[in-house]
Each structure stands twice: as C-alpha cells, then as structure tokens.
Amino acid sequence: MKRILARNRHLVQRLGFTGITLMAVLTVIPIVAVVIYILIQGAPAISWEFLSGFPRDGMRAGGILPAIVGTLYLTVGTAVFSVPLGIAAAIYLSEYAADTPLTRTIRIAIINLAGIPSVVYGLFGLGLFVLFLKFGTSILAASLTLSIMTLPVIISTAEESLRSVPQAFRTVSISLGATRWQTIRRIVLKEALPGILTGVILGLERAAGETAPILFTGAAFFLPRLPHTPFDATMALPYHLFVISTQVPEMPIQIQYGTALVLLAFVLTMNLIATVIRSRARAKRQW
Amino acid sequence: MEKSLNWREFIITRLIKASGYSAIIFVALIFVFLLREGLPTLGEVELKSLLSIRWYPIEDYFGILPLITGSLIVTLGAALIAVPFGIGTAVYISEIAPRWMREILKPLVELLGGLPSVVLGFLGILVLSPYIRILLDLPTGLTALTGSLLLGGIAVPTVVSVAEDALDAVPRAYREGAWALGATRWQTIWRVTLPAARSGVLTAVMLGVGRAIGETMTVMMVTGNAPVLALKLGSLFSPVRTMTATIAAEMGEVANGSTHYHVLFFIGMVLFLISLGVNIAASSVVFRAKKRAERILS
Image 1 (cartoon, rainbow over the protein chains, first blue to last red):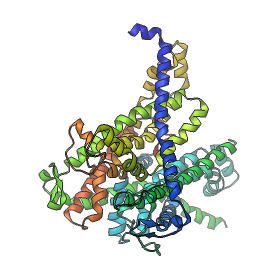
Image 2 (image 1 turned 180 degrees about the vertical axis):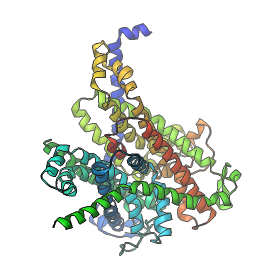
Image 3 (image 1 turned 60 degrees about the horizontal axis):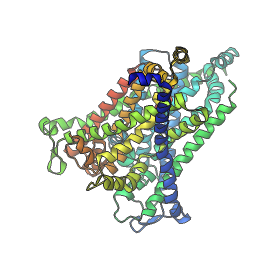
Image 4 (image 1 turned 90 degrees about the vertical axis):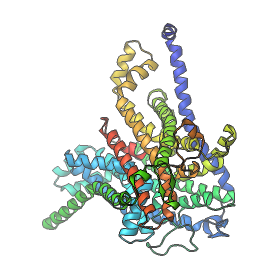
C-alpha cells in the first residue's frame, strides 16, 4: 500500500488538493447561503412602515423603528468611549512603550479582554455600571459595557497600522524640530488613519451585533417610545430579533426575517465600508 | 509659545500612558466584580450541592455539573467541526489557492466572523433544527448537535485566520528546500509547512475552542435549554444547557443579591477563568506577534 502511494504521489497530491479545496468551499458556501437566504426571506417584509413605525399588537405587527434607533444609539455610545481610549492605548503601545514586563502584561491583558465571553461582559456591566455606579439598565451602561468589549479590537488594529508607518517618517519629522506629539499627530496618525478607521468600524460592527452584553445592562423588551436620555433603556436590533424569535408566541415569520435582514444589512454595510477603506488605502500607499 | 507647547505635550503624554494601562485595569475590574458577586456563593451553597447534578434554582438546587458537561459536549462537537475545516481552509488559502481566490475567500471568512450570533441562532431555530429533527428522527431538533454545528461555524474564522498567519510565517526557503529534494507540494504541506507552523496552528485551535465555549446567544437559542448531565456521546442528540446560556437565560429574572444571582456570577467567574487559561496558554505559545490584530478580529 505504502509503495503504491509513494509511486503515485502525484495522484495523492491531486486527491489531497481536491479534498482541501472541497473543505474550503464547504466552509464558505454556508456563509454565502446565510446572507442570500435572509435577503430573500426578509426582503418582502421591508417597507417604509416597517422601518419607520413602532411595533403594534404585542410586536406582531407594525415596524421596528425603536430597535433600529436603539442600535444606532448604542453603536454611537460605544464609539464615544472606545475610540479615543482605544486609539490612545494603541499610540502608547506603538510609540511610547518599551519592551518591558509591564508592556507584555498589557498585551496579555488585551488578548484576554478579546477572549472573555460576551455574557461575562454582561455580568460585569450589570455589577459595575448598572448596580455599583447606579446607572440603571440604560444606554449609558450598555454602551460602556460594549466599549470595553470592543477595546481590544480597536487597540490591536490601530497599533498594527501605527506600526506599519515607516520609522523614517518619524525620524525626519523629529529632525525638523517637531516634538514627539506633533510627530505623532501630524505625521504618524495621519498616515495610519485608514487602517485605524478600518479597525474602529470592524470593532463597532461587532458591538452593533452583540446581544449578550446588553441583555442585563440596557436592552428593553418593548418600549412604546424612543429613549430620551442616556439613562433610558432601549430596544436594540439583535435583542429584538432574539425576543421575537424565542419569546413571543405566534410571531409572524415575515417580521422575524425582516428584522434579521435589517440587522444583517446594518452589520454588512459597516463591514463593506471597512473593506473599501482598507483596500483603497492599500492601493494608494506609496511606501 | 515654547512653554505652553511643553505643557500640552506633558498632559497628552500622561493621558496616552494612562490609556495604555487601561486594558490591565479592565481585566482586573472584571475579575474583581465577578469575585465580589460570585464568591458569596461559597457561603450560601454547600460545595457538595454545587457540584451535584441537579440544576433547579426555583427549589434551591444549584448543581452546576450539568451546565459544565453541557458546555463541554457542545464545545467538543464544535471543535470537531471547526478544527479540520478551519485548518483545511487555512491550508487552502495559504498554500493552494490562486491569488484571486484568496482575495475572495479571506473577506468571506472575515464576514462569517462578523455575522451576529443571534442571526445564526435565529436561522438555527427556523432552518437547521427542523432538518436535524427529521433527518435523525428525533423528538426535537433543538439539541447539542445543532448547537455544535452552528458553533463550529462561529469558531471557524478564528481558527482560519490564526492558522493562516502561522502558515504564512513559515519561511519560503523551507518549502523551496523540500521541493528541491523532490517532494510534491502536497508532501511539502504535510511534512514541512504544517509541522513548522505547529505552534501557531495549536494556538489557532485553542483560540477557536475558547471562542466556542464562550458563545452565548446561538447556543441559548438552539440547544433546547435542558440542564441534564451530558456524559455519553448520545447526549449530542438531546437538549442540553450550557453555562453561558444559563447565565443569559436566568439573570434577567433573579433578584439582585439572591443566592441564585450569586451562583450565576459564580458560573461567570468559572467562564472567565477558563478563557483566561485558554488565552494565556495560547499567547505563551510562541509565534509571530505581528498579525495579532487579525487574530483578535476574527
């Protein structure tokens, strides 16, 4: 047997390549299928009334406006906290930090933040923001929880893109008399901006689609009006989809697919923007 | 002018340094709050009953073993899917695929990582579970297997991107050496490239498993939520309840400060420690740090 295999090693290679290719195809097909299936099933539900109306009849009719607005609020809220903090942390790691045990601890902490289960973030948010700091179940508490979850994504992509700016740019700037901060702000940040933006959008995309961290920190089952202040709870698309697909009996299937489609469109649009920014920046880069 | 510039620079540098430490502070804060709310469990519930096999909080039965075995069996199933398919896809992308194919596949796999888990759970309920029920002739399609299949999909992007990084990092000279000795490309992949990248591939597997064990919404929606001990392989075909799903499903209904509340935080603490262990182990396996960002993103 072994000899046959050895003699026919090109046959083995062809079989092996076919097998691996098949595996890759089998991995990708379901992804495409999911997106197309939801598009087809959900499209008939989309109407102006569905996008701009309030839920009626125990959410079995009407629109999903409060959930859409809620997800927007949460995404913006998350950005407000995580973007400045994340970029500042990335600047520290890329421009200031030496390779010390402390820096290595920071890196391990970032990797760990990225690995913590989303529901544990929810528990943490409940313990710290909702109960200890008494923000209540609110947009503020949910945004803060999502921010911490998003932080590792933003820090690591921003750091990578800061690091990819050639060292010579910094040397020249400093030798022309600029201070370190001037160099970072006017030269390094400017060059790294597309990469940072890509990371920020991908991080926020994930925050927008998350359910578990907002379950007990800010998500409302149903609200008859839009939230007025950051201390109000809010409906949100992912949580709404969860509610109407598991908690509400006799839910019209169309509304469920419609909600899934709106959520998917929200997330995919962000993904697309990030991809476009990245590929355009790559094409334009001259170093 | 000179003076005010120095002053501003000083403040900004301080702020940046403080932000740099934020990751450590947050990990510590998370741990402290889990301990604060979770540790009272040990005073309220006897260890013996905590490690029993009955989870029925309404009557004060807080045995977390069924939840642990539930998490384990779903994760095991997911790993059986995600590891071969993830590594296979990584090998394809890095070693076999032509360039244009790579440009299509990589964003698609990245897209899978961005699909909200609640959407996958939703499709799991409506599409996958009826198929499983009919195909395997089961009383319900909401089983551990359903969870494993979806969770496998969720873990794949993590495995693919880390494993691909690792394969990518193998110097080209290794492959050229093997080819020069007369090995086929297939032999080179199996006997040279993969072994050379094994620590990175191992990291990929660990991070994938870590991703799977922490996933919440999908498993909560499709695994049927029955806290029964799952020890046999046959349990794959019956409903189970994972640790993450238990927290997500029950936290909304408990009174703050009650025993049940403390136990749920205790479970969160266990999950935190598992992910800490997995990630520290994974990051201590030496491999190229340059593409860390992509690993975290997936």
